[in-house]
Length: 314
Image (cartoon, rainbow, N blue to C red; front, side, top):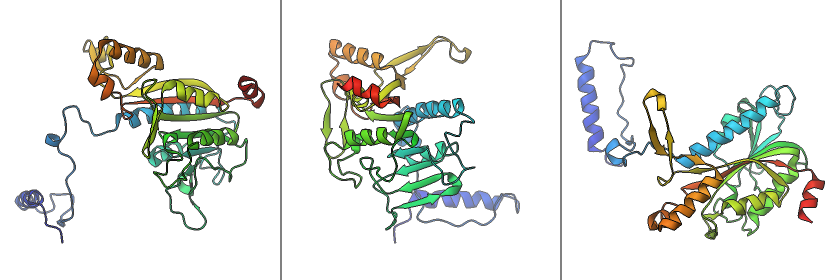
């Protein structure tokens, strides 16, 4: 049996002392049970200054992706393209590898198939949560053979393709895992269907595989991956958490000028920032601040017609 922390005991005794000084039934609940296994979350003193307890890249990419997703939902309202919880068991949206709470939020507006090789769904390999508009499938992005071609309207895959084929999440070892997955996404999408995704980036020339953690791309490598495999990029942005990139609002909330660390910038701004750091020879910015956790490329792309894609690849 683990030892109960002194801090927990101290807080419990303080709480009960205050309860005993109160009139009967003053508290919302009168019964108090000490949970000896309860732990403490990170305290203010344990956090670095400015730490608000979130992953800036994931929060940013999810917010941007949700804006694009809702724009597509609203612009196609009434078209029947996106069956939702009023049409259980019907799907035109699929996610591969994103965080499930993010996908579950999107599923409030359109039913989603969630694909993840790390799931343990028994012999059948799938399971549904109809009330939430979700069906889970134990599979890999490189092999979506259970879905017919030209049937999906949206594919989402946030901060995931960099892992495909590296084995970290129980997937098969495949050096072409990311490429095969993008090709599979293109195969299952209808012509004109949308692919919303993201992946970590570093400056051009530093791209590499960090086995078996992930692949680190550059903006141009990802653009070429998409365009060479049947996609046209409609919108893109770079999420970043480095303090080296600043933005200024002239009159923030009526309180005057406010400068802050950028959460997202354009790909052109990202490239300019890298050149600036190189010119200034800021070793810290070049080596520590431009890691895979600091920047990610986020895109909204559409599937090109086959003829158009073939002409570009000739």
